[in-house]
View 1 (cartoon, rainbow, N blue to C red):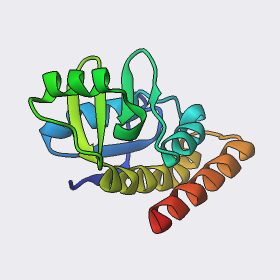
View 2 (cartoon, rainbow, N blue to C red):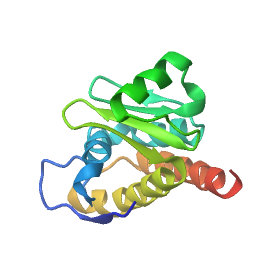
View 3 (tube, rainbow, N blue to C red):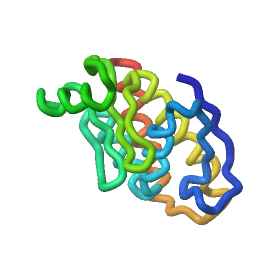
View 4 (cartoon, one colour):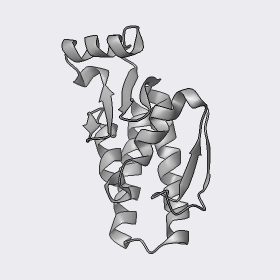
Length: 147
């Protein structure tokens, strides 16, 4: 899974970060874009614990947090069994995708770091949000290093 992150010049992107990936990853890109920037630290904290995160437009579902009925539904969407190392991501307009949790965590880390860099260049952000993002990133990095 490869991606490119750069500063977004468009005002339609609430994170000030443009995420480019191959078209098959559109559900992942769209799901990340739908998260309010104010909630991004909380999102990172939740996924750091391998807990599900979701709202009306998008969902991030972890294998160990799903019951058998949910895993069966994933099979219906993806046409194969979900592996314990994967995350099921669904986005209302663009569909569904399974991605490896390790790569997903790496993407979220890089994306959040880009948000910290680019958002202050576009608009005034609350200092407490920056602190919460840094705390959440530290927890995610610890999880990535220690499994």
